[in-house]
Structure formats: C-alpha cells, structure tokens
Amino acid sequence: MRVAVIKFLRAEMNAQFAAALERCRTTLRSYEGVRQQKALEYREKVASFQIGKKNILRQVGQELFRLLREIDREILAAMRRSLFGDEIADYQLFLTQLIFLEEGRDSYLASEHYVLIGGFENDPDSFGNIRAAAIEFLQAVAPEAEHASASLLDGWLNSPENAHQLVGTGDPGERAYKPRLQLWADLLQRDKLLDFVLAAYEVVALLPDFTPLLDPQQLKYALVGRKERERVEKLIEEHGKLSIKSLASAVDRLEQLDGAQRAKVAARFLRDFLRYHRDLRRLEVLNGAIEKVNLVGSEKLRDLSRLNGTLYSFVLAEETGSGAHEKATMRHVVLKADIRDSSRLTRSLLERNMNPASYFSLNFYDPVNKLLSKYGATKVFVEGDAIILAILEREGDPALSVSRACVLAREVIEIVGGYNHLLQRAGLPALELGIGLSYQDSAPMYLLDGEHRIMISDALNESDRLSSCEKRMRKVMAGMGAPFNIYEFRGAEKAESEQMRYNVGGIRMSEAAFKRLQEEISLEQCALQFPRLWGSEETVFYSGLVPVGADIFRRIVLRASRVPMIKTTDFSLANWTEASIYEVCSNSAVYAAIEKRSAEGN
Image (cartoon, rainbow, N blue to C red):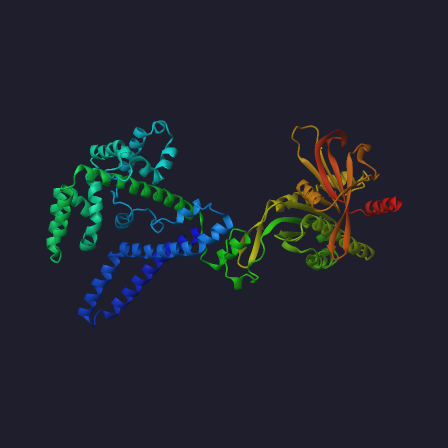
C-alpha cells in the first residue's frame, strides 16, 4: 500500500504542477490585448514558475516526506511493532529523503541531507569514481574484501556504521583509526577527489546567498577551480544585487585547512557517502516495486482488476459493507452440458414446422436456469446446442464446489430425461446430453465486453473435451450394450494414438475434480457388480453424500475405470493403459444397487 501511495503522490505532484501552470496560462491569456504592462509582468512570473519546476517539486516532495515520516513515527511504527515485532528492515525503504526523486539526483537535496557529489558520470567526483575509491579502500583495510563478491561489497557500502568502524570521526584523540583514516584521505587526494569533498561542505553555507541564480554544482566547482570561479564571479557581478564576499571567504577557509582538518572532513565524507549509497540503493528497490504497481484510474479497469483478483482495494470502514467488495474467488468448477447431434435434431423439428429455439429453450435452457440459484452456479456462456455453467468457491464459503457441481450435473440429466419421456410420448425427438465437469484450483480470469464478462479459464477447454463424443464411438457402442455412459479408448496401432471419447447421457469429470471431491466429502468404496466390456474392465465405484441445503443430502456414485487400448480394425481389446476416466453415474440402476446394498447391510 505504501508503495502505491508514493507512486500516486509522485504522479499527483506533477499533475498538480501542470494544472497550476495551465491555470496561470489561462489567466495570462485574459490579460492579452487589454493590459499590456500587466500581461508582461504576469508572463515573467509564469516563466519563472515554469523554470523553477524542479525546485518547487523538490520542496513539495520534502514536505510530503516530512508528513509521511511523522505519520510513521507517531502511528504506524508502534502499530507495526505490536503486530510484527522489530522486523522492520523492509520499511526502511520508505524512510529515505530520496523517495520523491525518481533518479535520486538533486544537488540541493544532496547538499542538505548527504554530501554534494558530481551529478554526471563524466564529472571528476562522480558517484562511480567515489564508489571505486571506497571499494579500493575497503579492499586495502579488510583482507576478506579482496576476494569479496560485488554484492557483498555493495552490502558493506550500504552500512554507514562501517564508516565509523573504519575511520572514526577524525578527532585527534582517536589514534586507533588514524592509519586507516590517513589511507582514506590519501586515496581521495591521489584521485583528485579531496578538494571536491572539502568544497562540497562549504557549499551548504553559500546556498542561501546565491540560489537560485547559481546551482550548488557551480558553487562547488567555483571553490575548486580558478577558471570556474571567475565565470561565477562574472555572473554575480552581472546580477548586480549579490556580493561575492561570502564566496571569497569560503575559498579562504578551504585554503587554510590543515592536515588534521582535512582528515576530519574525509572521515565525515565517508560516512555521508555511505548513507547516500545506502539510500540510493533503497531508492532503486523502491522504484522497482513502483514499476510493478499499476494505479487504476478508470472505473472499467478497476472492475476488470477486481474481477481478476488483481485489485488491492484499501477502503474506509464505512465502505467495507459495499457489495462491490465481494469475497475473493479461491477456486472454480466449470460444467458444460452439450446437446448431441443438434443439427439433425434441428432439421427434424423444422420438418415438423416447429421452432428449434423454442424447443431447446422449453426443454433444456429454462429447466437448467431454474437450478442455478439452488447450487450457486452462474451461466458463463450459452451456445445454440450447449450451456456452460460455473460454480465459484469464494473465500470463507463451504469447500463443496465440485460435489455440488456433481449433484447439479446429475439433476440436469434427470430433468432433461423427464422432459424426454414426455416428448417421446408425444412423438417428438428427445434431447441427448453429454456433460463435462472440470475443476481448477484457482480463480478464473475475465475480460470485459461492455457490461458482459468473458471468462478465461483452462477449465473451459477441458470441460469441452470431457463433454465431447465422437460419432463413430456412438455407432460402435450402440451394439455393445454398454452399461455406463462414459468411455474412452485408445488405438493400439500407434504409440501416441488419439483419444476416442464416448459420452452419451453421461457426466465425465476430470482427474483434478475427482481428487478435489475426495477432499470435499467422504467417499466410500463400493463393491458393485455390473456388466463390463470384454469382462476384464478394472472398475472401482465410490459413493458419497453431498449436503445441498439444511438437512438435505444427495447421493452421488462415481465410477473410476482404466482406459483400454483397442485394435481399431475389429474393436478388440489389446491392453489396458495406466490412465483412468471418472464418471458421475447417472444410471438409476446404479443408485438402486447402492440402496439395495445399504438395506441389506442394515
């Protein structure tokens, strides 16, 4: 959340500046042609405002940082400690002066809170040059640093406490640190960095006198080099309202520094540079996190993100009861009911001068729609000859999505079967269904087409395959007297033969759905005797009760069977594979056998 707040505030700072600038321009246009002198004065103010954008944004950022740090110190820190103890390392990312600088380069801020170093890579006192000197110093004073990895060295540079451990504060009484401090000062002197370091600390006192006319970098280089100093003095003289006395005094102070004073500044510089190095690395981590956060600015994107479970919504207490903030979806089941041979059925109805749309609606869609609320299902998609339903299992809901989908599928088969009985008595064609049931242990994704949700889920494709049935399989199975509604075969002629599926009036579930069902309800293995293909089919039956309401339970029976490999020429058995198929039995004879077995047991 804090990353999102910082990203929002960064964007809002620039947006508010742009809005203020646009208001200024609008006001300026109202002066044109009427009050020329006033317009000229106002134009200069607007130009000054525009030129000072960086300084204005820096001041706003510093004020925001002060407020955020005050909130953290007075409220959040105590709350965080009470919840998580003292493990607050990650939160240090937000306690750096640089959080409102995208690149971390600001001469004024560096002068005030760290130390002023070169702003560009080709500057003599650039960050890279100083870092290289610091690493060389570490390798010289710490034997283990000589072969240390880059990440380990970076970690040492990110700990300002190491500066005191290595060089102390530069006080004359700290004799133990003197050799290392002298080595550090000599390194800075060798690389021609020490003069820039000394000048950087003198610049701080000059800023009130010479800004915004002169940049801190200009002042620093003026203190170091005569040529740059002459250029700066000329600018001051041209301005006419500033004195160069304070600049000259700073130059004199630098020239009068003795060895001990220079060493003390070198010690201070190491500590300040390590603080800047640490906060710069923290800023890089923060910027990386900010890039991964997308602030939603439109209602459509907000709704789409919420649908897909990617919206982090931080609401007020009075907003928590809003229906828009529904519980997160944890997992889902997709059920596809497919009408077999719908083209032939449509032609048959048209030949009788009947409306196929009304026929399907009255005998299939309408009865199924009445079941949706009972099982908490939603309609995903309706085709001319199929309907796709989903049961979403939300956080805190009973973990019964697969078991309820099984009962729903069985009830769909039973209701359509009841309508078929009436249709056949009236001499009308019956509806033949095949149902596929797929489970996914995650929330579905969505696209939005206006107000319409379009579900994206692997379970959709899988349920389509599970509900499918090949025409040649219908012809073959019609003459075999198969006792069940779900079968699958594979050809023995090829190592990777295609799957030949049969699903007529059956409910086929995926293996993942079966495993989830075993977690949801208690399944008891049953010894049932039914005719088997080729007499050697390995089949296991499971029975269980599914709660569908207060004191209301429905029994489901599942059949798990091995997939055979067959010779496609004569459909004879060649072998059995290791794969299995899972069927939610819809044959009333199976349930009658279960009831009979239960009665005999009692």
